[in-house]
Amino acid sequence: MAGITHTVTNQAPPLVQYDVFGSDRALVEAVERHLAPEVREDGLAELSALGHTAGSAQVQEWGVQANENPPRLRTHDRYGRRIDEVEFHPAWHRLLGKGVSAGLTAAWGRPGGHVRRAAAFLMWTQVEAGNGCPLSMTHAAVPALRTDPALAAEWEPRLTSVIYDRALRPPGQKPGALFGMGMTEKQGGSDVRANTTAARPLAEDGTYALTGHKWFCSAPMSDAFLVLAQAPGGLTCFLVPRVLADGSRNVFLLQRLKDKLGNRSNASAEVEFDGTWARRVGEEGQGVRTIIGMVAATRLDCALGSAGLMRQAVAQAVHHCSHREAFGGKLADKPLMRNVLADLALESEAATTLALRLAAAYDDGGEQERALLRIAVPAAKYWVTKRCAPVAVEAAECLGGNGYVEESGMPRLVRESPLNSIWEGAGNVQALDVLRALRREPAALDAYLREVGQARGADHRLDAAIKNLLTDLADLEGVEGRARRLTERLALVLQGSLLVRHAPPEVADAFCAGRLGGDAGAAFGTLPHTLDLASVVERARPLS
Image (tube, rainbow, N blue to C red; front, side):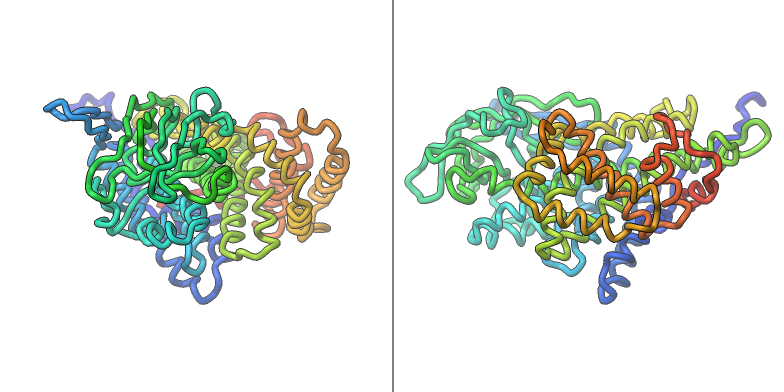
């Protein structure tokens, strides 16, 4: 029997058995805004169902189990035969199966598919971020495969399937398949043109034998991979299946799994190719051009994933402070804590609003929307992913010592928070990509300015920020050294424009004051006290 000193009081209840979608007002409003009327009702019902699943005690426990039992590499079977397999806890497969069945790889080809998937991906990240990696790459492989109509016809139905089949067997025997990716090598990293993996043509047209080493191969348990290698005609994209058509294993030698800071449930491996069979995707020497569609889609998923992590961190912080009492009242009602929570909520809502706007651009598919994506995706990937870590750390601090304990779930969010900034090109790569778009694609800047210009005249701080940005853009001499600052401004102005047009006045006002008007400090919780911060916090509160 517990002693009387062990009576538990003044502790927030677990944030569980709630609708992750319906409780996120910014997300719901973005979906309603971007989905066409004819698919809106079905889309909202679908997302609400997933929201209840994501908030359930059972699914949240699966997320804990998947992270407490990370994958294990098995290079050989008991008889000494090489098998190169990765073993996962059953919770991992349950989560991945739920993600596939929820359409997280099925955006292409259905009305409003990208907006619906983006909202679902943002929610599912909050349950367990690691399984987002294979879901993201499978989704993103489609535009790369479409450069080869025959390959697309063969693989796209499997990639967009809502059936999860974990068995390693010939692709033709599977109703659904997952894709991974292997681009970077230890000597080159982001400079993929420095890759040394060699591709030797075989007798059958379009087939090659690969020899080389990949430093990072994501989701090595997948059915197939898109990789880059040096063919006689230059750097080329290839499809590498795990199992060949005759049922034999392809040469796919897993050297080791990476021991990562976060993303513990997901496997990342070093892989050796030694005469590995591959099929060319696109033309020889056009590897970067072929795979760029996959890279862009995964970069948007990095922003979505970070938006999801931020939303979960803010939801936990607001939930805790709404129940916890200190100094004679609820923490959330204390002016200083309210300022912190409101500041965090602004960052979360701005990230969600921007990411869903870009997903809608994919659904639209028009020339101007494609041009907007060219500059807005790397800018969003740069800024949103960089804001994730400070948001997660500050949110954990809102829980005090409880937030430093594993059982709270906050340390997992903190460990995960830097990942999306590093994956698919770190900050400098994104900033340089923005510069490339500015210099080579005038239509991209024009589309961006048209987008932010829709909010002109609605807030003087936004107007001033647009004017200052135009001044920066007029002088691109020696711009590389200030590329990060320029990219940050592009992202902030775009976020401000979207919030001024679509968010409640108190949210837009606080964002423009703190992010564009310079009326805030460097730390969270330094917004002007005259703002309606109570309404901002209430909007962010999850309803459990």
